[in-house]
Amino acid sequence: MYIIKIGGNVLDNPERLQRFLIDFAQLPGPKLLVHGGGKIASTIGLQLGIQPQYVEGRRLTDAETLKLVTMVYAGLINKNVVAQLQALGCNAIGMTGADANAIPASKRPVKTVDYGFAGDIAGPETLNADAIRALLNAGLTPVFAPLTHDGQGSLLNTNADTIASVLATALAPHYQVQLVYCFEKKGVLANAEDDDAVIAQIDQYKYRELKEKGIVTDGMIPKLDNAFAALRQGVSAVLIGEAEGLPSSASAGAFSGTTITLSHA
Figure: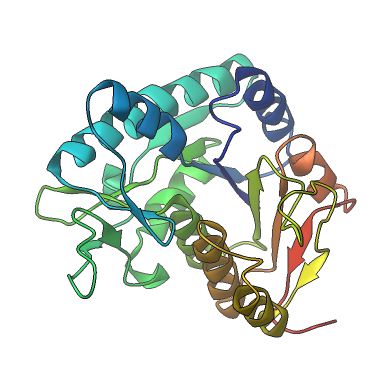
């Protein structure tokens, strides 16, 4: 099965999103979509006087920001994606981690940084994989917004890359899972100014080197951390690349982005 995460400049570009969703809807077999939406949340937040704050690519979520991301992620973005997939013949169902107790989490403890209402997921074993499999077996395609819950009535803002990674590892015992991160670039780039400077393969040693040289920074760090975590826990493959054509190229074995591996082949 395919677990695909979209974010970046895909969601806020209607033409690009539509092209991606056409590809996604045509993927054979069970599939699951996870979306971000930080850029849209930040734009709407600024209109409401809420200044976005980040530390190492992760958003700080105070009480007002939690209201904002709940409205934008679970409402505006999620339901529009679901509606577009329905128009393409894909029977999608919008989800957060609170729905069907799919993804319980805990509020991130304060250490050097107070992330506010940010959610940490203990591990794939805490997910309600049976409920997610029941939806898949009923022919539904879950579309997850990046929100979890603490079991005490509070929603938590949770990194969408992390959600995609834990969903992939939770479902890996039941399916041969390919985890695909789609965004606006063709892959992980050796030079941020050159869109064609795609690094074809990154293993753990290459990743360490790229971080030390400052080539991989900010939001790409949690994305790659989650990619390696998924591979270590049984996910078959992790791919990172441009949204356009990526789902179909991945299923056809003609992938042109970045492949993440634990060790160099």
